[in-house]
Amino acid sequence: MPSLDLDVFDPAFIPKPGQLFLRDFKTRVTPNDTQRNTLIVAGVYIVVIFILWHLPYLRVITPLSLVLSNLICARLLTVGFHEMSHAFVGVLTCAKIYSIELDPDEGGATSMSGGIPWLTLPAGYLGSSFIGAALIACGFNTNASKVASIVMAVFFLFTLWWARKNWLSWLLILGMSGLIVLFWFVGGGIALRYFVLFIGVMSCMYVIWDVVDDTLARKVNTSDASEFARICGCCPSRVWGFIWLVVACIFFALGIIVGLVSFKQNLEQQKIDSSHFLPVPGASSGALSLSPNHYRAAWTITISLSVLGLL
Image (cartoon, rainbow, N blue to C red; front, side):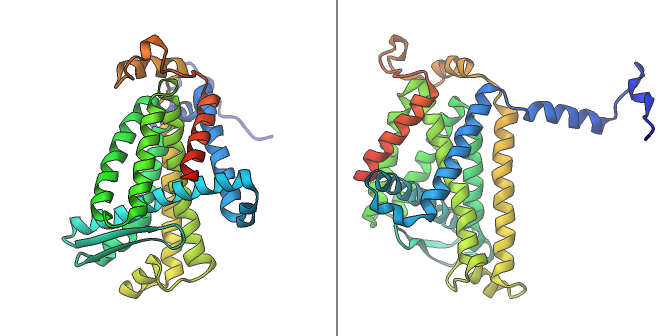
């Protein structure tokens, strides 16, 4: 029988700083009921997105074809984050941005000249991972989701400036902007919180699956990893793809951890806080607060995305 260190049971026992940190960290990352519901919804998002993304023959089924069209709209939005990250780092490295294009079949493309390629090339995947992680963390809190939606609106403006000749970008961004405004009015912002969470999960999943598909499962000569390998010359594209994949998974996990640690308010407290931070006009009368139930708010997101998909 192994011996026990009885000193830990001594009333005079003083835990070490590392032990205090681990104990406090474990307490902070333990989800409460509201956070547990958020994690369940995020898990459902992952499963549904994975199934629909990898079963294209479901398009022949009418109800699922609507969901697939919605998935394409959300996927194009995450592609926009990817291309916007290329362009943003390009601007920081003195590149000239000519255009951003979004395509439902081919993905996206950013046309630029100059800059520092070994910074602009990985910026797409790494930037999308960071944005997705930030949105996932904000998806744990209503007020944080409001701030995230405002930041997304700024991203939309920059994207429209560089993609002003691409009509699909206009339709996508205007449609998503309309949904953000709509969800702001539903359930005191609960629907907005789950919408931000959905976009965050989609952004992280897009990075993970696109890296696997383009570099690990099959080698695409025009992928970011291939171009980066050609410039650096020290490692093949699959190695860089694997590195970016690990970074994307780390960002995904950090987004969840930050959300769990930072936003411990329960649903009722979030509703009270939301009523004092950028409140919905007339919400006190209850006319615009359509439902306090977060599951009904999730259904509202699904129905609204279906309308966008039909457009």
